[in-house]
Amino acid sequence: MSKLNTNPADVIEPFGVADVFCEGVVRTQQLGPCTRLTFAVSDMVYGNGAASSVVAKLVIPTAAIPDLILALQGRSEDLNDRLVAFGCPAVAN
Image 1 (cartoon, one colour):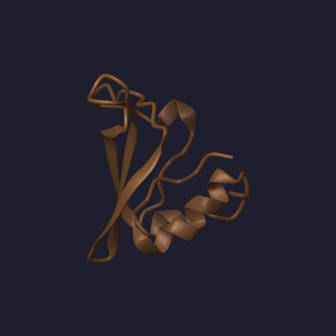
Image 2 (cartoon, one colour):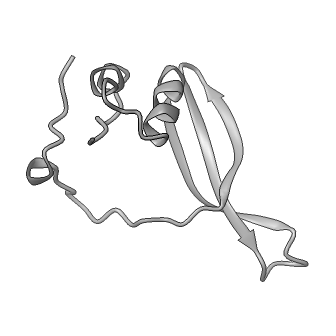
């Protein structure tokens, strides 16, 4: 098991990864030990605006979801080792 380096000076983006605005999760799918989260925005151009346009899909280990929720709530003090163990990037404090 390797520990990811979260020092901002040592984290690289080998290619540009665009930020994507999402309004929410519209679908979840179980993929073996992982879960795919599909994010979308309201599509006001298509039809009557009732449609949702998918803008991003994120696949993460299902076992990491509780820790991800804690990290999003700002309680990531002891989560880095557990996230890395699941193959997820470490969360910077």
